[in-house]
Image 1: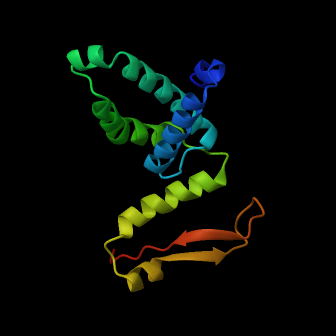
Image 2: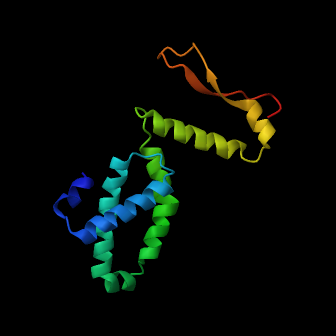
Length: 142
């Protein structure tokens, strides 16, 4: 397991870096991934950071910079984590992902049009016993 790699390292420097990377990843994934999962990756990033710090000259000679790694994290790894770690059992993450995707779809619409199609409604149709749902009512003009 990725997270188990860091179980033996408990220095203040390591814990500080782990928390920094966890915060970065949480923001980059739009808080759509559980913190436990984020911490596992943050541990791995902290170990990579330490290796890069100790062997920085070798990494630079080979053409690998820490900035390049962080660009990869932002452009490739974080979006992959959101897709890879979809939480079907945690409603908070599923709803957040749904709403963010929906907002990216309708963000160019004016406020009146948004209000016409999106509502939080009370319903009796859900078999789970829940009373409320986010309703999306697209019309033919959209």
